[in-house]
Each structure stands twice: as structure tokens, then as C-alpha cells.
Image 1 (cartoon, rainbow, N blue to C red):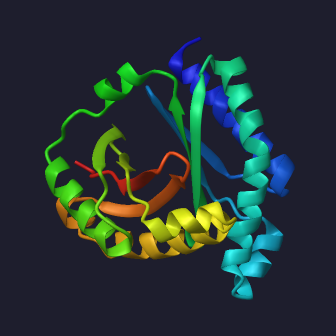
Image 2 (cartoon, rainbow, N blue to C red; image 1 turned 135 degrees about the vertical axis):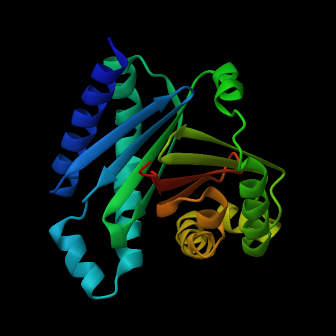
Length: 230
């Protein structure tokens, strides 16, 4: 199957899945595939009940409910991507930008060699990593490893490993994983939005998403950029 056809089929599947489970699907689903990464960017995605909760200041409640629902949906998403697109997803991350009514799914595919090829250099890489390190140190500690790549002209992916501090590991052990994720999401995204990335990349940052796999002590950050009109 051609790449564009695969991306269209994935977009259709994800749109229907979210509509069936949230009561309203996104108005657009943009799929980007650069092995071993697949990103699925959702736009105009906010259910009527969620809109009411947000108007009452219940942002955390919306995020917690979405987290619970996504944990139910992830196994099925992995199976379906294998069936319709022959994509073996080993890790799946997600995040929302509720004020922009947008969201992201990030899949990491089964092929370590592809990751080395995907994480190629780009002009601003060193400066991006320096600001990521500065922000990570403010939020928790310096990561043991940082790398990044452009998946397309609009999507910059950053990977970090070795970022959890001991108190966070203890909170995870004692069952506070969801509370930790909600708190880290708010803290880190606030710091990332206040970062210097627009000056570094010379592009407007439309959205920033971040998610973690606490068991792997690993995190992905996704910047959605406004492409330059040359």
C-alpha cells in the first residue's frame, strides 16, 4: 500500500475511533510517518461535555478522564495499526492542548536501526537541546540523554531519557502515577512554552505536547510549528 494511502486509512480509523468513544471526533487528523516514528495530530477535538467542564475550570478532570479512556484504547490502536498498515507499535504516547482543541499521538515502531537514521542533524539542534536541558533541570533534573529530529517541516520531535528523580519514582511505586503525570504535564508545558524555541527555530510554535513512559524513564516532546511562507 502506498504511503499516502496508509496515512489516509490511519487518519480515517483514528477519527472514527475518537468519535465513537468521545462523542465527537476531530475535524482533521494529520498523519506523519517517518520510521520509526508515527505522529497523529488532531485538530478541533473537544467534546461538548468537555467544553462545559473547561468553562467551569475543571481542566484536570478533563485530562484525567481522557487518560483513563486512552489507556483502554491504546491496545486496540496498536493491533489495528498492525492490521491496516503493517506497523508494529512498541510504544504509544499522547497529549492534549485543550485550549487549542488539539492533540497528538506518537507511536514508536519496532526497529531500532530506523531510529538512528531518523535522528539526523539539523542546523538548530544544539541550541534546541541546550534549552531542553535547561528546562528539564528546572522541572526535575538534567536528562541522561537528549536527541531530536524533524519528522516534517511542521513537526519537531524530542526524546529524553533518564529524567525521573527519586521522589517521582517513589510516587509511581505507591500508586500516584496519574497525579504525577497531570502535575508534570502542567509544569513542563508551562516551562516549554516560556522557552526560547521560536527564536531558535525562527518559526512560530503552534502547539507543544509532552508525554512520559515512567517505566522506561523516557519522554517525548512534540513541537508543532507554523511553516515559513517563502
